Image (cartoon, rainbow over all chains, first blue to last red; front, side, top):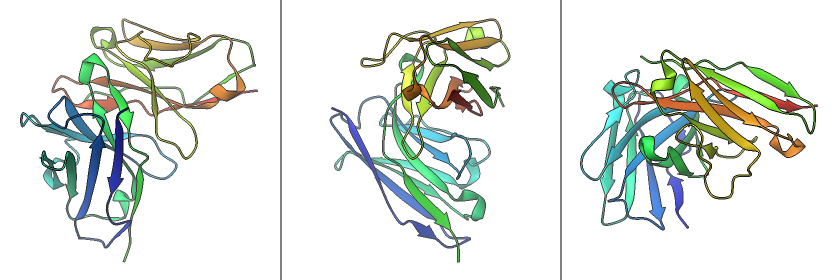
Length: 118
Length: 107
């Protein structure tokens, strides 16, 4: 059974960098794509982007200048960094296994609420 | 950037058929996925590649995609199907795009 678990600070100050890690079990991080998706309170889902072991990445154009994703194969984890955050970045952040056109986002983490506030 | 449009809300009576649409330019040329999300929980994949159901998803969930519109159909809708539903596709740059979501109410 594939499981994903997000971890990281729940509170980030404005202008600082949001950093989250997703730990994967039940599958190798070397397989397929791995995505980050967020959901502001009371709103819909927004794809932040994806990364893969092969180095393939794609970031949401609206966030591209502030986003970095990476993979740590030794820990079977992937990470998200979002710089220069503002209150509009307050959201539940989900990590998900991304099977692309072959299967969509088939496994999701439980999500972690990140609040941007001083 | 590519956009997907869903109706904000759909209502259905128990036992009836619910249809939720997702519109986008030439959407029929792309694969579509559907997710349901209940309050406080992560989304769950219910349809991929337009019409395929993942293991464990009830047969009452079905999907189609043609022209500019994809449709999620729930036959014999049950109270437990009340949730937010999101469609998702890929734009020309392989970026993943979500629709705005549809709140399904089972009256």
